[in-house]
View 1 (cartoon, rainbow, N blue to C red):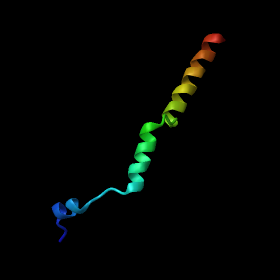
View 2 (view 1 turned 120 degrees about the horizontal axis):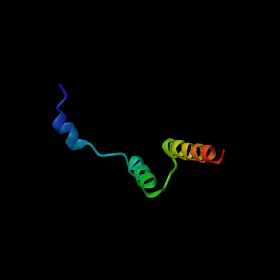
View 3 (view 1 turned 30 degrees about the vertical axis):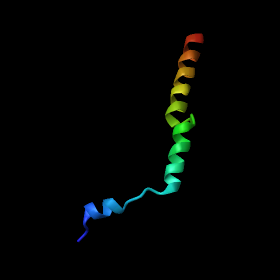
View 4 (view 1 turned 180 degrees about the vertical axis):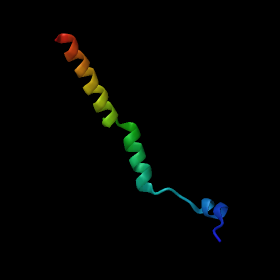
Amino acid sequence: MIRFEEELKKFHPSLEIEDAEDIIINHNLTDFTDILVQMLKEQEENKDIK
């Protein structure tokens, strides 16, 4: 039987994960949502021009 409390005490996050979190949080990365919002803004601007 697994003793969850004991296993949780042993848990330590991978250093690679912590490094990745720092990089992601500290950089302004463009994701799909940002691209989609930009495309929608451009589409609206093009509608106003026509």
